[in-house]
Length: 347
Ligand code: GZL
Image 1 (tube, rainbow, N blue to C red):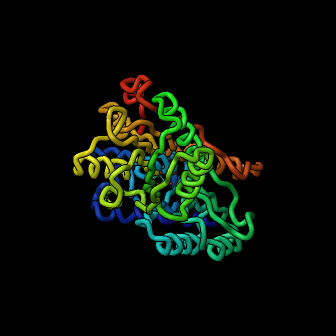
Image 2 (cartoon, rainbow, N blue to C red; image 1 turned 135 degrees about the vertical axis):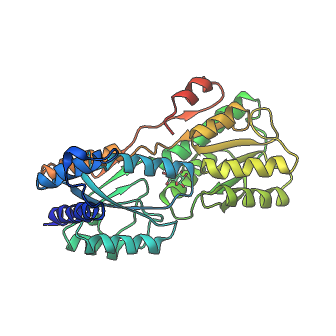
Image 3 (cartoon, helix red, strand yellow; image 1 turned 180 degrees about the vertical axis):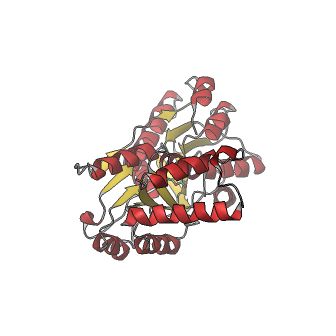
């Protein structure tokens, strides 16, 4: 029934389109640029097989987020058998809750949710479960009383990313002969209580606790945006004259931090005053690394769409799916062939 709703919707659009376009019924005289219309007509005539998917996305706060959205939108297409309803929450949880309730009212077949923060989801997930709509989480996770409230999660191991960053710093300082030196660190945190922030902060801290000579001056929420990242880094530079390392929990905050450091007359990167560690590892960040401004970047792979589609296809065939699916990722630093890496980068 749900799928027919879409078929009727598409049919109505087609009828409206034809009626608004006067005498364009004669297929032999289809004007240029209406091929898609042909495909839509064929889909409707086949009694349509669209799987209706509602996606609630966090926002468009970072390069990573835009790449993640592109991955989802390019996967859930009509050509791939999906009818997509996409809602951008502009980084507000209340917008995500509203979008999910709209999806439930529209009786979508699946809800895909990237939850901006981990808490506050039990009620709406229960409403989706009661409506018989599976929820698949992407990227960030939820903290709920009953894990059966969602079907699966696909994303990164954020704690591992933080551990990789701490371990990289430990090895780098050793190589620089600074293994026993007092090291002052500041952290630009991502959106507080988001899985990415929690994992990266805790992962780095798990390495830091092995180094009595490492001193975390301050951690502060930069909300994963360049503007806030610059603002917070300016505050850090005003408060502390001896910062050795900035741990920035995403590339966009890193770009803001670099602005702030250079505005303060300091330098960053392998030859600079301040070591810069970043997360996401998008193309723009690798270019900044090639310019000598970032010491290391810990990848967070945004290409989640295909894996989510594979889960849905399995569910459509009545197959079991793994609850948690981690996506492969690595890290980059200037010892690598950055030129080739930048060229190959898909985001
Ligand atoms: C991580 C994702 C984070 C990115 C940021 O998976 O949730 O949110 O690291 C984005 O760039 O804003």
